[in-house]
Figure (tube, rainbow, N blue to C red):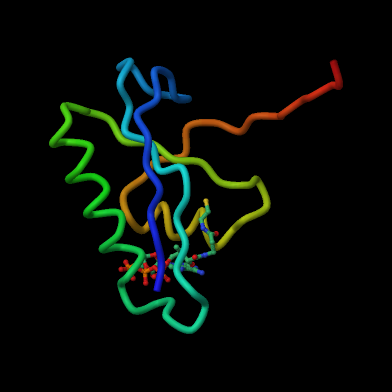
Length: 90
Ligand SMILES: CC(C)(COP(=O)(O)OP(=O)(O)OC[C@H]1O[C@@H](n2cnc3c(N)ncnc32)[C@H](O)[C@@H]1OP(=O)(O)O)[C@@H](O)C(=O)NCCC(=O)NCCS
């Protein structure tokens, strides 16, 4: 019904440690939303991060994804910044 994709990042915005548990992807199928699955996925993700020694956990979202921002806040995340992304061909 959904997934959480995780990594350990050496740097994450607003964090102080160099091994930050990071929520790379977080998705619940539309028909299963608002039933606590997303919350349980993040709880399991945080437990995994703690088990491998992380003391901080972080995530990101597209700037216009208000529902994701609201869900992050509901799960105890604090918003720490807004970034712009750039690329060019080489
Ligand atoms: C974000 C997402 C994973 C949440 O999954 P979910 O199973 O609906 O989440 P839950 O039901 O466990 O809700 C967790 C908390 O977030 C809140 N929340 C979830 N969706 C919300 C919304 N659209 N608006 C406001 N709050 C919301 C819930 O109220 C709940 O808080 P509460 O327990 O205090 O009531 C799901 O909406 C999703 O897959 N969205 C599309 C993909 C996406 O945007 N992923 C995040 C990318 S950064």
